[in-house]
Image (cartoon, rainbow, N blue to C red; front, side, top):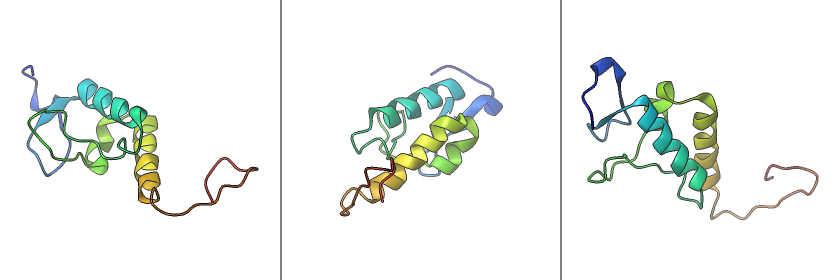
Length: 95
């Protein structure tokens, strides 16, 4: 944690009061989403003492569009992890 101007600090959600620089927030979300395994959808606050989940809409302005879109896709996919799905060989997306 380093001092930063309030305008440079990004909060991750209403459930916690922690704020991070853009680079740290982007790196944290990117790492969690890329690690996948079903847990990449729910990204917790980077502060080790906080169990609050980050809110994608709150973080959206700090994230590059590709990271935000992958996070949203992981969230959507996680909603169907327990659902029975059928895949079509001629399509890359689940049906």
